[in-house]
Image 1: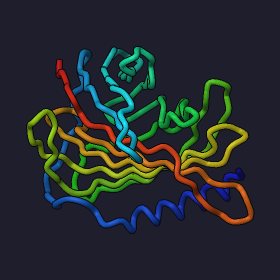
Image 2 (image 1 turned 90 degrees about the horizontal axis):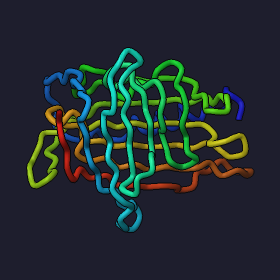
Image 3 (image 1 turned 30 degrees about the vertical axis):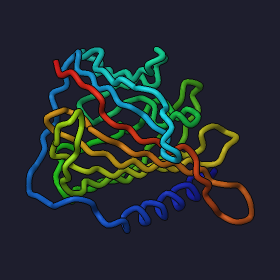
Length: 230
């Protein structure tokens, strides 16, 4: 896909996302960046967003922090690595996997701002960037992110105050032979847990043909089952 056509499609989807009414209550509270530590880990139960069928447990852990950055690895309960991500600082991702549908992974130029701390109700930001995969293939992508309101979120039988974050990604083609992939994320971020209690993801693939259309793709729900803060 040509860059101009791709960015035009991204803008259209971004405007659509902005039309969605924000969730939760607006407060003036500002949330600073978390202090991730080696040994922090969060385990999520993943279910299919279409039929509720279990799709395994995923554990996200801070494996190392050094001059190269913060390494956060996500592993399936079967032992496979689903994401090996590097962050320059909390929320600023240098490389990693944005979708298992492909998978969509690589190095981001400039760095991807998954969170733009401090966070507060109503804050929004956008990015245009390039993802370079292991084969050197460069893909233009864009991100539109918005911090919404505060909602109660239950995890492990306890109720937390969570800040709702909405992300819309136009990820570009998964590979040189496929149409572009659009991904939506809705996350409930809990400051005291240094991460989310819940997240919902929805993806759409562009259908090639005379008419511009999108077809539903992967859809998952993630729920925090256990965590350990070092």
